[in-house]
Length: 136
Image (cartoon, rainbow, N blue to C red; front, side, top):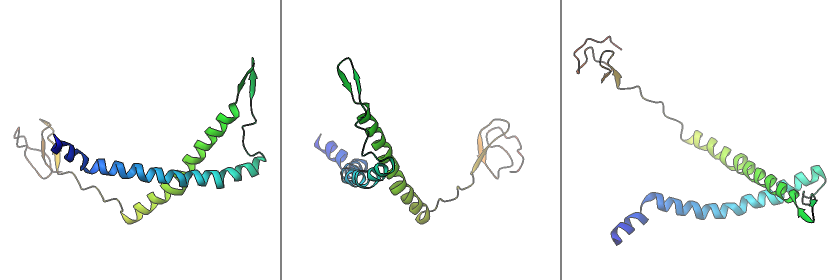
């Protein structure tokens, strides 16, 4: 029982997941700071309002603060854009530069036109139904 638990914990994907959670938690501070300290002030300077929390709807004595919801939606979009444009896109370009995609190797087999069994590409006769096949 303990051997199985040890094997589970030491599998690569569990360790990778743990590292991803820790790095993700640290990375959250960077992204939140980027949005809060750089992007939000830029938007506030453009629209001349610090945020949309002043938008409220008074309905039968209840206060619906849809401006706060809009702030959260805008914050989410800004965080997603910041992560994509400042981190994902440059890292993908670096990965493509350092690890170019390998060309796919040509197939080694092809289907027989009579019985549809897989035969080698260079075969002139099917090994399953013995029918002659045209050269590839």
